[in-house]
Image 1 (cartoon, rainbow, N blue to C red):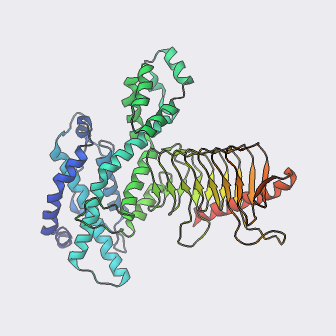
Image 2: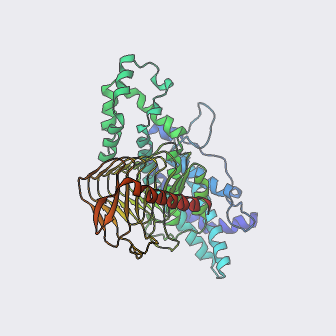
Image 3: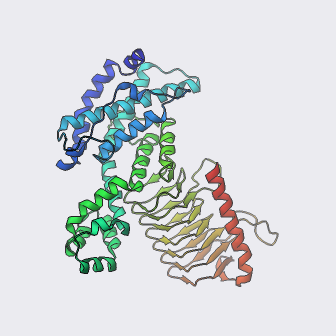
Length: 467
C-alpha cells in the first residue's frame, strides 16, 4: 500500500496541490461568517482512507463517502463531523487542512477510476495523463464549492416554507397572540418573494414585524441539521460537477468522471432523491417528505425555486433511446405528491400541479398554469383503426390555463390540441382533441380512456423503479 500511495500521491502532485490550496481555501472562507469558520471540523484521515477499492478495483462506497462528507463539511460547516464540546479552530489554516483532505480524497478516487476505466477499454494511459486528469477533476470540484455553498443555503432557506419548523420547542416563549397571528399568516409567500429577489430581507422583515427575528437562526439550524432535502441536493450538485464538470480553473482541464457520479447517485437514493447525476437541478428547491422517492431522469431539467410537496414524484422518459427524453421544468414549479411526468414535455414558469396527477407524451404548459389534483393529460398513439396511428400532435396549454380536479385531457390526433390562454376547465371534465380543437366528451365515454392513461402511467413508473 505504501508503494501505491507514493505513486499516486507523488511529489509532483503534492507540490501542485499545495500551490492551489491557499487560493481555494480563500475563496471558500470568503463565504463563511466567523461563527461558521469556528464550527468547522476537520476529521483525522490518512491517505489509506481514500484508497479503499472494491473487488474490481474501483473506489469503494466508503472512499466515495469520505469525499462526500469532506465536501459537505466545507459547504455546511459543523454538520458532518463531531468535536469535543467547547473546542473550535477559527483559523484559515484549519480550513486549509480540510481543503487539503478533500482535494486528496477527490484526486485519489478520480485517479483510481481513470486507471480502471482505461483498463476496461483496453487502452494505455500514461502516469502523467492520469495525474493531470485526476488533478483537474479535484481542483475544479473544490473551485465550485463556493457556488455550491450559495445553492445549499438557498435550498435551506426554501425549506422555511415548511410549517413543521415551528415546533413546540421553537415556539417556546412566543406570546399566544403572536402564535395565533403566525398560524394565520402565509409565511411561505415571504420565503418565495425572498427567493425570487435573491435577498432574505423580505422573510426576515416578516419575522421582525411579528417579533420573531431571533428565531431565524434556530429555524435554519434545524433544517441544516435534520432535513434530508438540502443534503440530498448537495450530493446531487457534487455528482453533477463530476459527471458534467464546470471548468472554474481555466488552466486545468476536467473531463467527466466514470462511475463515481453514479456511486454518489446510489448513496443519494437512500435519502429519497433519485436524480441522475447529469440532470440539471437549480437551487432554492424545497423537497417536503423526501423519504418518498423523487425521480429526475438523465436529461431532465428542474429550474430554480421548485417545490416538491412530497414523494412519489417522477420526471421520467418514454423512450430507451439516448436522446433528450425527460421533462423540462421552468422556475417556481410546484408539484404535489404522487404526480408523474413522462416524456420530453415542457412546463412554464410558476405553474403548479396538485396531487396524484399524470402528464404523458407531447405536452407543453405555458406560464402560471394551475393544474388540479387527480388530473390526467396525455398525448398518445392509439391502436384504433378510426384514429391516426402516427405520431400524435402535442397538447399545448397556453399561459394561465386552469384545469380543475379530476379532469382528463386526451389527444390522439395528428393536429396539436391547443387550450388557449386564460381558459378554465371545470372539474371532472373530459376533453379530447378533435381537428386540433378541445371538445368536451360525455363522461361515460371518458372513463375507459382515463383508465387507459392511468394503466399506462403505472406501467411506465413500475418499469422505471424496478429497472
